[in-house]
Length: 451
Image (cartoon, rainbow, N blue to C red; front, side):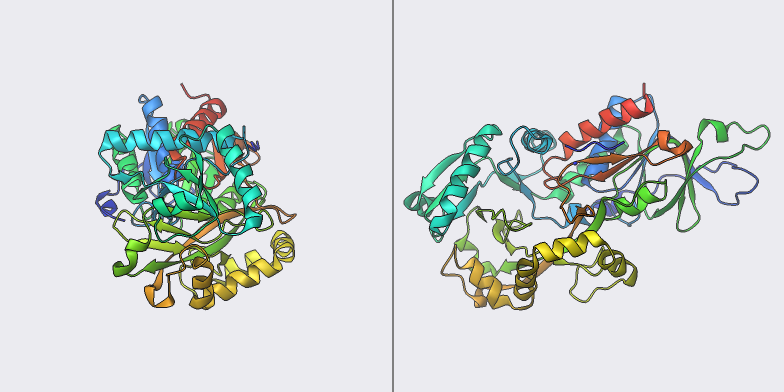
């Protein structure tokens, strides 16, 4: 089924759950590490929030969460900008817009309940050229339609009042935008899940999901837990139902249960620059550009961090490895998978000059600094150094379109009724994670008839 509307600070303390051995079919020599009613695959924000939501709704059921890394939130969830978005950019009435607005409110409420520090430092979306003003005004109207709190248009003088070193003609002031350390949020989700009785199994890389074909004489486990999830090490976890939130590997994990490979995940690396500590006074809050509808990504921006640093960027260039955070990281499998996909060919052709510009700015710091100087003229190449990188799991269809909606799938055959794949949970999934989790939990309840 398709629904279109669409990972470590302290995390190492989350231990592997105790091993519960059970006998499987005579043809199987692997051990069953645990049995659960529902297994969630993926220890990022969306997977953790969904596991938390499901166990809170169904305390009578048993739940496990599987993560292939040693720690949770090791990839997209732990390598993002840390912004709590307010919901300005998205089409009015769309699920994405509603989930962002709801998710931001839930995120702030959750952080207050759990004493997770955050800063509501606001955001300015700044028009630096006259031709951007109509787009800025249209974006302002869109934000109002999305019921984003506290929005207002401000003048050049008011921009300087808010951000003394920023220059622009006009801006949208979004005071409700904030920042948080999403790794702390993920850690708290996991603690909630475990406190409610859920188990977390790390270093479990799923490579097969099968149905039990037979049960040994006298053993009812094969009937009660008919789904076997196997790891790359040959370990097994047995369950009734599976929900996958696999991020960068969502297409491959879906494929093993008979789903189409589309939408395909194409990895795009975003490289950040970091302001030197003595220059952090240049930026108070988030400073963003006016989006250009001709280009597929937002553009570089200024983002303060909870640790006091300021990140600049990111760019967006094709990564040659799904978890390739360095320029020269390469995986032949991942690279060939991407470049042989016709959807990527079409995306490149439609955005050739944009892509070449992104690659150029990624290689030459002065080119990226020149873009940033449009907003803060005082910035110089001596004020910055290269910072961290993240990889975005961009879902792409065969026509070269970025998939901007949520996509669910189940596969084919007998296993289809027992698996729910979250194929795409588009940005801003970190902000929206609690709201997305409610939607995923409801979808799982309906599909699996959970009671």
